Length: 254
Image (tube, rainbow, N blue to C red):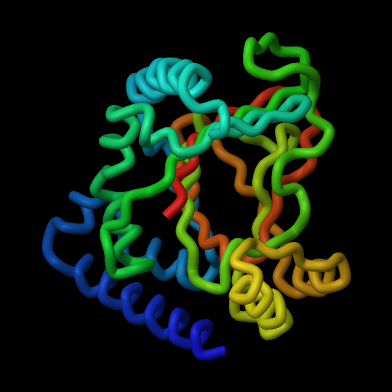
């Protein structure tokens, strides 16, 4: 209980410090983040920022991903998880100096500070999901269940993740869903205690999930290629049903 309470106080403190810093003239524009956006993240647990990445940067990331994944396949296949229609490549920061440098973007650093009071270095992951109708040398078949498809929370702590959409993400190709503001609901307290004890994310049972969705609603985190989505995964969330198409996302885990 103490750990949960202390993290909540720390999170509120650094969110407020971030908002004060953003009152410094021109800093908000330089960081490409605004006080109202910090408030929105604090209250709702997510934020979309449209057209954050231009087409040139998207192409550079795509090219660098191909090189980094080739290195992973050659040197450390343990960083790859695959099942029909799903691919997840972990710890890409160790295989690509360019992706590592990109992840230290000033906006991302400031968001990290607003959560933790630190400029943390993220763990970089790539996910690819397909219906099997698109050719891929890395995975076979089409997706039936995505990774992390069950409603869950990642931590009892406020946990920052940033999704960089490398392709359009619509309801049809399985966006992440979040139940906004659910992190403050006492119904999740037992799950946060499980996280502390078991040191891993925890599945939230169907009855609790239904109560929270009825109370707060659910939001599909859709967007266009080049958008980024900031999410606090202390809130209830899950990977939505994948119906058709394909989806590529670069994830920054802080």
